[in-house]
Amino acid sequence: MKIVVVSSVIEKEHKDMITAVSDRFNAEVCFTASENDLPEGFEEPDVIYGFGLGIAKRDKNLKWLCVPSAGVDYLMKPGVFANDECLISNSSGSYGVTIAEHIIAVTLMMMRRITSYYAESLNGNWEHNHYQQDSIKDSHITVLGTGDIGNEFARRARAFGPARITGVCRSGICDDPSYDAVYKTDRLDEILPETDLLVMSLPATPETDDILNRARIALLPRGAYVVNVGRGNAVDEDALADALDSGLLAGAALDVCKTEPLPAASRLWKTKNLLITPHVAGNLTLKHTLDRNVEMFCEDLENFLVGRPLKYEVNREKGY
Amino acid sequence: MKIVVVSSVIEKEHKDMITAVSDRFNAEVCFTASENDLPEGFEEPDVIYGFGLGIAKRDKNLKWLCVPSAGVDYLMKPGVFANDECLISNSSGSYGVTIAEHIIAVTLMMMRRITSYYAESLNGNWEHNHYQQDSIKDSHITVLGTGDIGNEFARRARAFGPARITGVCRSGICDDPSYDAVYKTDRLDEILPETDLLVMSLPATPETDDILNRARIALLPRGAYVVNVGRGNAVDEDALADALDSGLLAGAALDVCKTEPLPAASRLWKTKNLLITPHVAGNLTLKHTLDRNVEMFCEDLENFLVGRPLKYEVNREKGY
Image (tube, rainbow over all chains, first blue to last red; front, side, top):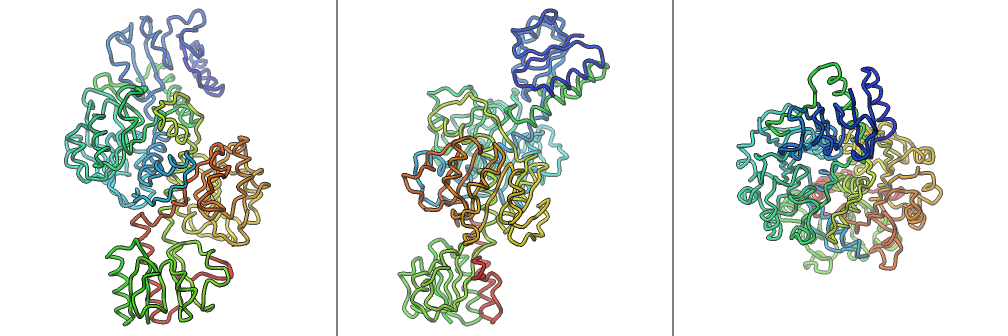
C-alpha cells in the first residue's frame, strides 16, 4: 500500500501524524512538495492526499484521492481519474473556523463602512463623513448552505446580539442550534425579501449555478448585503454589479468569482461597494485549518487501511 | 425648569421620548441642531443634552450637562463651565455594541491580512500571495479597560472558539463572565508578554497618558496586535510606529490619535501594518447607539426631575 502526500505547506508535526498511521498498518508513505517530483517506486500510488491531479489522471491503481479543499467541482469532470472507481474525499469541515472569521470580517467592514474609511486612509485622508452604519445585531440573516462554514458563521453571529438567523439548504434539515429556522432551498424566494444579509456558502453543482440570479437579487430589500464564500458559479455577477451600482444593495463581498483570477478588465473591480478578496477566506495558512485538514485525512486513512468506509467521502452524485 | 437638546442627528421618535419625560414634570424642552440657534427664553437652561459647550461656558444657571459621548476629558479643563457645581453625565454604556463590532472587524482585518488583499483589490489586483493568517480562536487576548466596550468585545470574542481573555482595569474587579481573569492595571507588565491581541478602551486621564509606552510595547511578543478605540493619549505613537515598521508587531488599528484629525504629515499614515480609522468606531450613525444614548438621557432626566442622583454621573475626580 503506497501513499503519496502532495503538499508544500504541511509541517513536520503533520508528517509525523500521517507517518504514525501508515506505520501502524505497514503502509509506505512519501511526502513531496510537487507531484512532478515523486520518489522512485511511488509513481502509481494507492492513495493520494493533496492536489495530485496529474497522478490521478494516469494512475489506474489509484483507489482514493483526498483533497485538502472543501469544494470538489473540479474533480467531477470526465477524464480526471484514470480509475473511474477511485474514491474521493474532501476536507469540508476544516474550513468552518477560518471562513466564518472571514465572513464576519467582511460583513462588518461593509456594514460599518470601514471599506470607505480604510480606502481613504491609504491616501492619507482622515475621512470626515459619518456614513450611516448597520449592525449584525437586530439584523435578519439568511445563510444559504448550512454546512460547516455556514454553521460556524451563524454561531459567531449569534454573539453579536439578537438577530434572526435563517438557514437554507437542499434538505431543509440542519440541527445546528444557531438557526432560528431552517428551510428548503425551494423556499428561498419567500425568505429573500426579509433578508438584510445573505451569506452564501454552497458547493459548485449544476443546481447552484446562478442560484443568486437577477430575479432573486431583485427580491432582496434595498440596503441588503451579500457575501459569497462558496463558489463563483452561484452568483450572476453582472446582475449583482447592476444592483450595487444602482444602490439597491448596500454592499457585497465576493471571495470567489466565476473566473479566477478575476480578469483585469472585469467590471467587478470598479463596481460600487463591492469588496473583492482573491479566494483567500479558506487559506491553509491558518494553523488551525491545516491541523484539522491533516487530522481528517489521518482519520480516514485509518478507516481506509482497516477497510471501513471513508467518513469524509464525497457523494459523486450530489457533487459534494 | 428649562432643557435644551442640542443635536443634529436625533429623530422624531427620540424627541418624543424626551418630551414625554419633560411633560410629566412640567419642564420645558427645546430642540436645536446648533447651540448658536437657541429659541427665545432658552438662553440659560437648567439642563443641556448634547454638545452645548458654548452655553455651558456662560450659563451660571446650568445644573446638569449630559453629553452624548463616552469620553469626557474635554470637560475636565478649567473654564468649561460657568457654574462649577454643574453635574456632568456621559453616555458610556451606549457605545459597547457598536465599538465591539468595530474591534472585531479591525482585529480580523489585520489577523487575516484583509487589509493587504483589499488594498490590492482597490488597484484591480488579484493578490496571489497567501499571507500567514492568525485567528481569534486560541489567541491570548488582553482587554485593557473593562467597561461596557471592553466587555461587549470580550463577549463576542468568546464566540470565536477557545481563547484566553484577560481583563485589566484600575480596580482589578469586573464581574463580566467573558473574562478568564481580571487583574489590576499595576500587573499589566506581567500580562503583556503573553498577549497576542491587546485591546485598549480607556478614558483619557492623567493615569492613562502613554500607558502603552515604549517599554510596554517592547514587552509584547513578536507578532502581537494592538487595537485602540479609547483615546489617543494612551499610546506612545512613535514607539508604536517603530514596533510596526520593525516588524515586532504584526499590526495595529488606531481609531483614535493624539491629534485628531491626524495631520497629513504624520508618519502614522505611512507606518507598516497600521490600520487607521478616523474616530468612527463609536459613530452615532448606528441606530442602536443613538436609541440607547437617548434612553439613557431620559432615564437620568427623570432622576434629575424628581431629585434622585444621576445614574450616569461622571466622577470628576476619576475623570470618567
